[in-house]
Image (cartoon, rainbow over all chains, first blue to last red; front, side, top):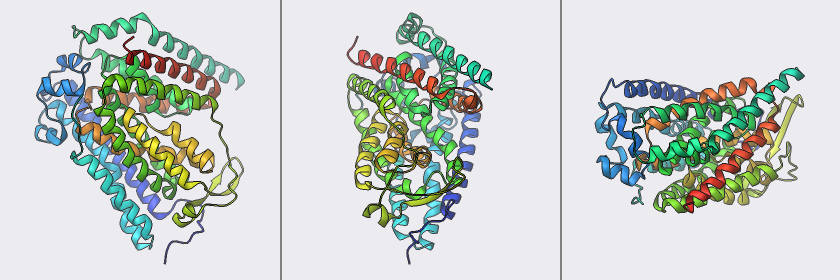
Length: 142
Length: 319
């Protein structure tokens, strides 16, 4: 039996759970962002790219930036979390993943409520976001 | 109260004019040249300027009823020395973070609707990936020209687009009925619940293809386009449209943001000051919203965006 077409006022169960997880994820991500940035700017952990060199690099294209610094794109930063600049990517990536977590959380609820179509839409959305996050899609630099 | 309104509007007007003069001044142009030449600009100068700018943008975004992303990319790419690749990466995270912050409250109030958002978001987020890949593959000058044109189109939309508080939807179309896209929300201004439904869903979904591509290609938040499509094309009430649009950004921008992140286009030195500035500015904007005239602030934003759009075009043509 599918969800009734007539809706009552107010958010649905899955909407409330989504909102709650979204809020918590956002707060954790933002806090992480602030902490890691402080570590970076105050030099608590040495960065891969010296801070004083950044004004030179950020005026160039990303292709030139990666070429001149020797950095690799993708998830390579995860092997360099001991570096002040790379550590910032942890909360940045987390903020990018919060939406995925929220959809994963509500998928079982949608199927439990026999809202099969939206359950599958949510699964496809998770797949789309996961493919984007995976780093398998890429282009050559310009 | 009228005196407070006038003083608040006066402050906003003066701030806007100062901001416009600052951005178009020779000072900014000279600073850009200095930074581009790789001279000894201390590394902390531009992130600090970015923090202050984004704080101001956050205020203006709330007062003008626009997202932070649509202001961030045009203005930062037009007047700062950062390459467009990094500006777009930061812009997406600015828009994403704003949506992550606003989304929960809007969902809990039932103003943002998950059933309306999900089919739309699926199309927009997929196309945002395509837009991001395309945007990173094309030469910078082409993106700069296209960005300038897009910004001027956004200015046109802001000038011309009307809003319909409660669009007349005689009957939902078959697609929205099968998806169950309809709802009820409590409208405070009327003191009662309002039923809503949508129509022209296939057309709306097609438009979100273009919206997603543009959002990904330019690193803009897509609220400037989401709201007119949801409201004027599909017929959702304006409050549902605005709230769902804000929530939508958290999904659309996530997909594009990952592409930029994985391509190396995200610099913490830019993203963090931008995100922090916009968020605190938004908080201040909400507090002073009641004391300002939104129409005047909207005009200031339109003018600034117009200047930024023309500047992007000139940069793209090498002028």
